[in-house]
Image (tube, rainbow, N blue to C red; front, side):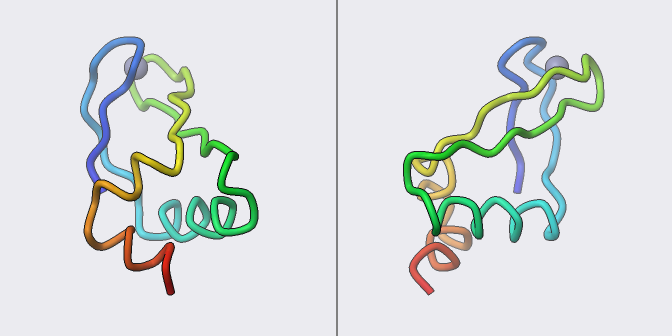
Length: 64
Ligand SMILES: [Zn+2]
């Protein structure tokens, strides 16, 4: 899943493992955020459930 760093705008991908981890967190708590660490600036971009609902694949994972 492709995301964009909110600090330096660097586009980077979450691995399938990271996506699965995020989905588990968000299934337990819909108001939680997943911290995606940027490979360039090392800061963490907070991803809300909404970010995963925009992607058809992760949306399905959240529902399943
Ligand atoms: Zn960054």
